[in-house]
Image 1 (tube, one colour):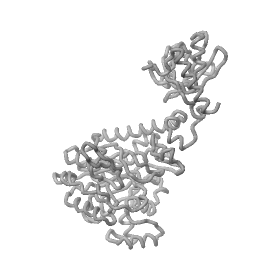
Image 2 (tube, one colour):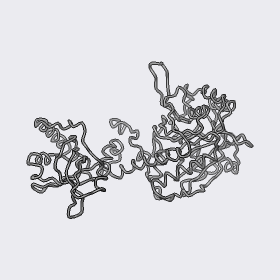
Image 3 (cartoon, helix red, strand yellow):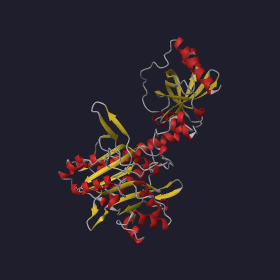
Length: 501
């Protein structure tokens, strides 16, 4: 049968079941004692068990049938004998389809080949699958379908389930490291009346009751700094942030960031923290500090490499006071193509200057110009350079950190300079690089100075270090995935009806 005929056939079976008094979706619960993997691992001959999962294979031999039932942890074989469960239940079992979710009870034994098997004593239909499984469980190959219908991807492809379990372990490791170091996890608003704390174009919405225009957050930075003012000395948030910009293998408009702030810390303490966070996460997933990313070696063994952005440009004859035209002329003479020094173009310049994709070691790029870092503290002996780094790993920017600017007067000057335009106009605070928008756009009306944040600074914020890590990108690297879509369960895609437009 073709797929449409199979769907129709399953609906016919559903109707027949209901006429027989069977409720195909009627069970409210089933006593599943443990996962299938736990059941198999703890095998004891003759042990009575109760388990449930999705029917993934059936093999019939007259009055004897075998089947496989799977859950997220693994599979177990079923042995169904007509003379054991009865003629009616056996016929009922024979009429089940692959994909149906069933519950079984029975005793464990091993076949002559050593396979753990449940000798079924009773069987219950828990949910009827009205559509056939993809490609008979041989794996879902169409990438577009895999991303768009992730539930089918998870059913059909065990490696995909493993990726997302491993991602969860990675996030758990990040939390454990921070908690051990005395950081507390907090939650800050996702809707802001002022888009701030990072570069990028915000998504906008409207709150009806307050008649208030709001933006989905670009980053949680300014709210987390308010908590430092309030006396919470070590805070972090694993947050969802949003940029109304392009999509690529490294960019999704909705993404996950880890931001951490430490009172009385600085950029150097953030370097130590990010090394510890990433090394411990890598060890948790790979049990090693050396691994491959897309065929290239990665070596996380400290110390990590460092280069100075400001010194490199100075060696080329460029300084923070250099004009836009001079910067463009010098860079083009070196064969570099950069359209201004926006946030996204800055990352492209760094990639051309230092070619981090060829390095096995992580690379700290330090000493960014102050005009490109409006929320970072300047070096005491050089106000034109900030105490900041960006971390490149596997050719991608995965983290950004600096000694936080806590001077409210200087912060106001920087905000005002941003609104007036210039080279720093499209730069912002912490956050990953984003593709350049399709066309230059003026500063939107919601980009006004955050007076409440400046007022908070006036009450006194201790010196601090702040760190942002792109969780999705870190997952790409540690799980060796080529696209950010492979580590996000439900990446943003164009609606199916608009495909090909």
